[in-house]
Length: 309
Image (cartoon, rainbow, N blue to C red; front, side, top):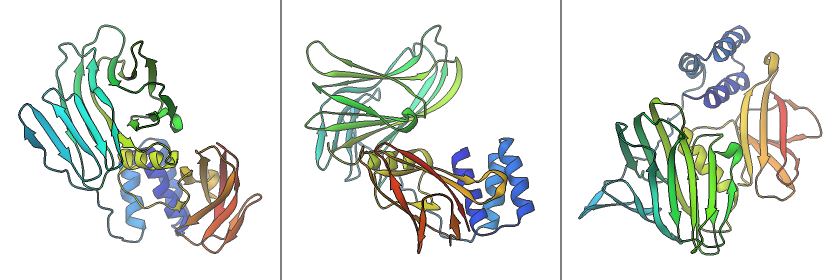
């Protein structure tokens, strides 16, 4: 369980007026990194609701030495080494040369899992490895027949989106990832991700998401959130995909909830956040209209609000 998910569950507890002394103890436990215990206690205080359903994996289909995966949103083809040879969606075909190659693995014991779940617009990859590299990093290498491609990185560099006029490919990874894009002399692009620098046992996760150029970057950020956290019930949501809720946690001192948002499409716009609990007050040049918190946000801007319930 990650800190961001547990913080939001504690924010829900604040919003439904859980006992203050209990919240104070849970905040101390959160600061100590006791995420599982805090989540369990928060779940016990929150109203029971149907658990969000994460799609089950589709069955791989063998085709000679290759494997096909298809869930109607993504079609992928890999070889027996896990190299990604084909990746399409209903509206785009990514010009893959070879993706999902590992450099620096050597004789390190490892096992790769490739999974496509129903209802998810991305292909998941997990790697269990006992990395014994002597220098540099364990790297993920991706070769694409995309000339004059541009790249954009997501919030905290947790994703890289590479596109040209024909197709787009987003790769999801952990926050603060190290990426490098290189244009090839004979055309095409090489996108590299450093997966691991410290020797020892690790379980690593990443994903490939084909997309149609021109979509809101917020759609990719939302897909990353599902990749990292699964489906979850958010305290604050925006119908505008360009406005991403990046954090939601109890406010310092336990006085309300802090919610932080970011505009990711590069245009000033009105900001409307729907809240799943009854709001009483919000600080600053912001107003409450029914179930929504209303304000404005600048292009690529970030705003934070203290909300009381």
